[in-house]
Length: 567
Ligand code: ADP
Image (tube, rainbow, N blue to C red; front, side, top):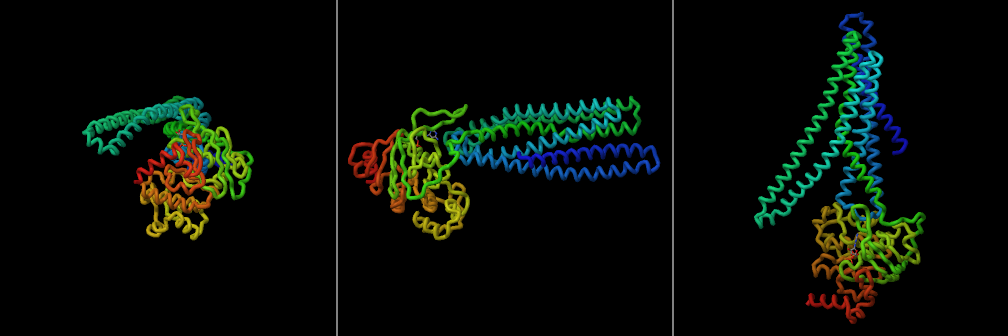
C-alpha cells in the first residue's frame, strides 16, 4: 500500500470515527435535552442542546457517507492492486503446483479478502475504538467509576468476543470445508456417474452416501450457527449488563437524573459500533487465510530466471543451436519442489538453420514437449545452452525469446469470443488481408466463410471440431509469423483422415519456413530436412526420412506399423 492510499485510509478511519462520535453526541445531547426539558427550565437554557442535537444528527449522516466513500475507494484500489500483483506474478512461468481452477478462485475470491480486511475488519475496528474511547472519556468527566465499568464492557464485547469468534471460525472452517468437499464430490459422482450407477444397481447406495454426507455437513453448520448466535448474544448481554450497572452506580452516587441519563445512553450507544466486531472477527479468520494463500502464490519462485539486463533479440534470419541440453523437471510435493530422477531432456544437440524444417519424433514421454518448452523459455535447463544467432537465450528477456520462437502449443485454447478475435490474439493490429491470408494458409477459408468472422466460439470450443481447432491454432501461429515456428503435435487426437489432411496442408504451408515440428505421425516427413528421434530424453537416431527407414530402429518400426494401418 502506498502513501497516498495510507492517507485515504486514515481519512476513512477519521470519518468513521466522526460518524460514531456524532452518534454518541446525538444521544448524549438528546438525553440531556429530554431530561432537562422535563424539569421545565426557560427555553434559552435548552437552545444550545437543541442546536447540538440537530448538528449531530445531520453531521452523522454526512460523516457516514464520507466514510463509506473513502473506505470503499481505498479498499477497491487495494483489491485492484492485489489483483495486479497476483497477475504479474502469474504471467511469469511458475513452478508446478497451482492448477487453473485453483488460481481462478484466488484471483476472484482471495483478492476480495483484501477489500474485506479494510472495509469489514480494520476500518470498523479503528472507528469503534475511537468512539468507545470517547464514551469512556464522557464517563470519566461525569462519574469516573462508570468509565471503568464501561471500559470493561467494551473490551469484552469489542475484543474478547471478536477474538473468540475469529478462533471459532478458524476451527469450524477447518471442519466444514472437508465436509463440504465430500458432499460436492458425492453429488458429482451421482450426476456424472448416473449411467454406471444405474447399470450396476448401485444408485441407492450412492444416493445414501450423498445424503449421509449432506447430513454431516448440516450438523456441523447447525452447530456453527449456534456458536455464532451465542457470540452475538454475548455481546448484546454485555451491553445490557453494562448499561444496567452504570444506571445503578449513577443512582447510588446521586449524580442526578440528567447525568444518569447521559451516562446510560452514551454507554448504550457506544456499543453500537462495537457489537458488529463479532462478525468482523469471524470474517477476519477467512480473510487472513485468503491473504496467506495469495502470499503463497506470489512466493512461488518463477520457473526461469530473467536476466537483470536483457540482451536485445537478434534480427532475422535466425539460426538456433541447441548444445548438449539437459532439462530436469521440478515436481511439486507438499513442502516445495523436488527434482525427479531422470532428466526429461538428456544431452540433446541440434541446429536449426534458416528456412530448414526439422521434425522431432519419439514415443510419448521422450521429452519432445520439454525441448519445445526450453526453446520457448518456459523451463530452465539444468545444463547446456540454446543460442539464437550466437546469443544465449538466457541472456534475453523471455518475452523476447517467445517473439522469436513460438507457435502451436499442445491443447490450443479457444476463447469465448468471435472467430476474428480468437485469431487477433496473435496479431491485435492485423488487417483484414493478413487475417484472410492466415485463414487461407491454414485451409480454413471455407469454414470461416460458412461460420462467419463474427461468430462466437464456445468456451470449450464446442462449436469447433478437433480438426478446425488445430487449424484455427495454426492460423493464429501463421498470423503471428514468428521467425522460428514451433509446432507441438498438431495432429494429436485427430482421426486418421483429418490428421492426414492437416499434416499435408501444414507441410505445404511451412515450406521454406524455419520450423520445428513435433509429431507422432511419420507420413509426409520425407519433406522435412532432418528428423530427430528422441527416446528417454536422448537423441537415438537422426537423419533424412529415407535414411531412417533404411535402418533398423524406432523410426522404421513406427513407419512399418503406420504403413500396416494404412492398408
Ligand atoms: P513428450 O512430449 O515426448 O511426450 P514430455 O516432454 O512431455 O514428453 O515429457 C518428458 C518427461 O518429463 C516425462 O517423463 C514426463 O513425465 C516428464 N514431465 C513433463 N512435464 C513435466 C512437468 N511439468 N513436471 C514434471 N515432469 C514432467
